Image (tube, rainbow, N blue to C red; front, side, top):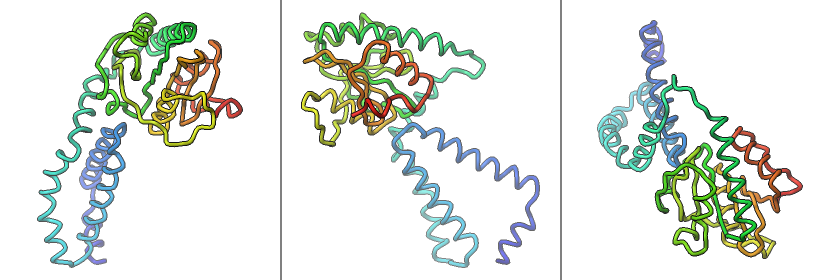
Length: 267
């Protein structure tokens, strides 16, 4: 208690700035890893670090304080190794980020993306081309992108239809779209382990449910057998869809709405 009082007695505006800077560093780290699967691990490490630092500062545990001091350097060296994949992906994301003073033409661009997606999906539905297209949201899909073939092309209907043409090597996997770009094709997605009552639902539908259970992405599926169009979001499916309903869902997704699927039409 006396130590705490001594600390507070020395508190001034410089100390406030010092604490603010440390807080900003921790906040930046959490934001840096916000779209990676390591964010929970990082948060746990920060909480443990704060608890240990607080315990060491208010107690006279000599051996414990010595252990904390001697292991801190080893932990700092180990952190870049532990988070190597996340650091690389996060740095790549920073490199893709536009400067704050560059005006984004998001609404216009996403309107074109929606039109191209609807045109491609409805055409593949008519042709009965089996397809699965995943739209990235706030959670990074980099681990799944790395399983596929890089494309890095603007979203357009002709390319999507070509990718899913049954004779092409890429048609079996998923296409992943980030913003206005087709990032990769032939990507491997996790399959849901949940039992599905409808026997018409195949591997693509299981993959669509699986990826939307693990992330906040949205998945579009075209059935090879029936040509039916399906949307998966938050582990739920809605089908069959017409062009009007599909447009409404896509517009809601790009606007950031959470209530994309009506409860009565999901399975």
